[in-house]
Image (cartoon, rainbow, N blue to C red; front, side, top):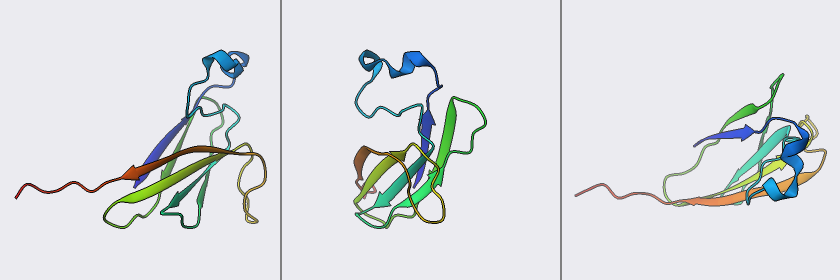
Length: 101
């Protein structure tokens, strides 16, 4: 399953609370974590010299209904694991579709 997460440009206007919506992605985001079916998180660092920035992430998921949990981090993820502030972004369920028969 492939995810594309867009980190908005860093400017003061983006932090105004009236502009935030549910599932807000902070311009301070430097990494994301994705877990499938309550498993271990896979981490992906933003490697963007400028903003806005796009993080491409791909995780393996078994066939069938799957639950994905996504977190964002305000610091890159190093070899020791996460270090920084975490924000629970979303949980989503992918349901299989039936082939016409």
